[in-house]
Image (cartoon, rainbow, N blue to C red):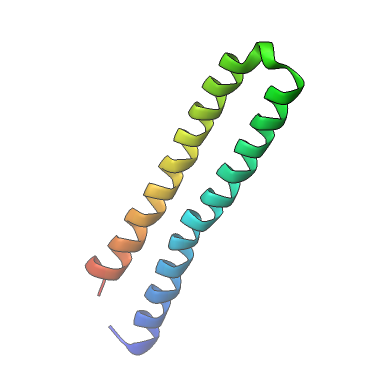
Length: 78
């Protein structure tokens, strides 16, 4: 594989790793909104918490897939 191919693999791995950064930002935003929702409606705390945990789990799955793709690009395709 030539130098251009290796460079494109590095760019692809970098983009895949960015999913983890964006996931962290999204989870922080969601947690902040959940705190605001509980402050406005304390009776719905259990429902808000369960929805927050479900959303964070789905977002974290996306980050893990991004990390897996980055590892595949770095170690398998070189």
